[in-house]
Amino acid sequence: MILQRKLGAARRMGLRGVARVAASRTAAALWTRESVVVFQMRPEQLNPVAPAESSGRVTVHSEAAAAFLNRSQMSLPSNLVGELQLAGPGLRFHWIEIDGQLASWGFSARAAGSWPLTETRSRLTVPAGGVCLTTFETIPAHRGHRLYPALLTWILTERFGEGAPVAYIWCRRENTASCRAIQRVGFREIAVHRYSRVLGLVRQSESISKGHLT
Image (cartoon, rainbow, N blue to C red; front, side):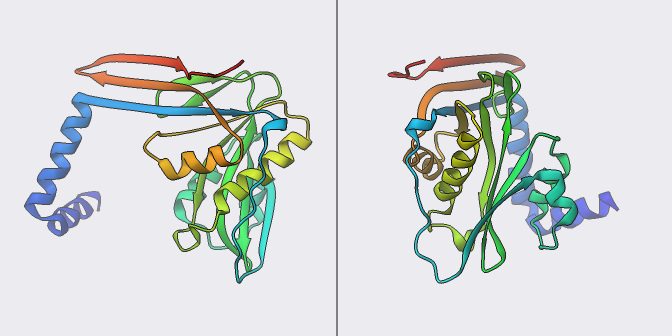
C-alpha cells in the first residue's frame, strides 16, 4: 500500500517533479540552516489589538488541550488534531470562533525553566512562572482580519491576569506578517537562535538583540 501511494505520487509529479524532490532532499541532508527570532513581553508592555470588523459573531475560548479534543464536536484540520493529540498536561488551547466555526488558534503553557525551540534544536531559558505561546494558525479565509494579534492579546490578558510575570513567542524572520503582528501587541525582540548543519558539522548560536534590557 505504501509503495502504491509512492508510485501514484511519482506519476502525478512527473519526472521533473520527482527530480526536484530528490534534489531537495539531498540538499537538506547535506546542508541545513534555521534561525528564529525570540520575542519577550512583560504585563506593562501589552498593547491590546482587537479583530477587524466582521459580519460574523466573534467569540474567543480557552481550555486545556486534552479536554478540548475529548469534547469538541467541531470539524478540525488534521494538523491541529495532531497537535492536540500530542499536547502535554500543561498545554492550554486558545481559539477564536466566527459564527461558531473555528477561525484561528494557538497554544500556551507555563515553562518549567526552559522551552525547546525545535527549529534550532536549542532551548529558551524562561524565568519562574513565565509562559510560552506557540503553534498559531488562522484559517486562510479569515486571514487579514487581525485575528492573530487579537488572539495573542486575549491569551496574554488571561495569562498575565493569572500572575505570569513574562511571556515569550518566536518565529522565523522571513515570516514578516507574524513578526509584525507579534510586535504590534507589544512583544520586543530579545534574541536570535541559529542552527546549521553542513556535511554533518553542526553549529548552534544565540545572539542577544540590540537594545534588549534584561
